[in-house]
Length: 88
Image (cartoon, rainbow, N blue to C red; front, side, top):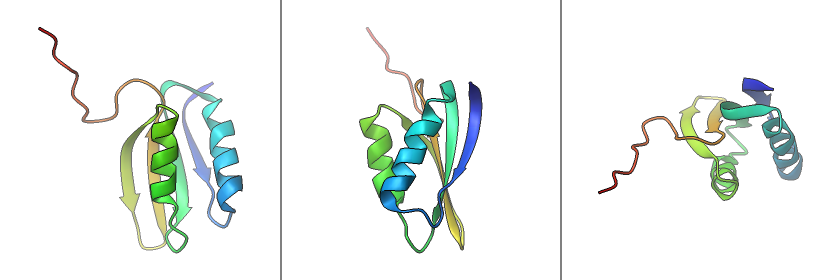
């Protein structure tokens, strides 16, 4: 198992991209990060954000470039910058 993995799904179909991302997350340790590289033209960022939330993962960062979008998804734990709840 690894703490960080990059998955480039540019040019892949919507369903193939989700299948590859699901398989990649089985290799990621808890609190590890999966970087998904997406086409800027076929922007599936919102779909992957919804998918990550439904799986209980956190979006830790999004980097939008000229040709691609890099989406960083954290498995378990807290996302970067997320505050812990205070209990009384």
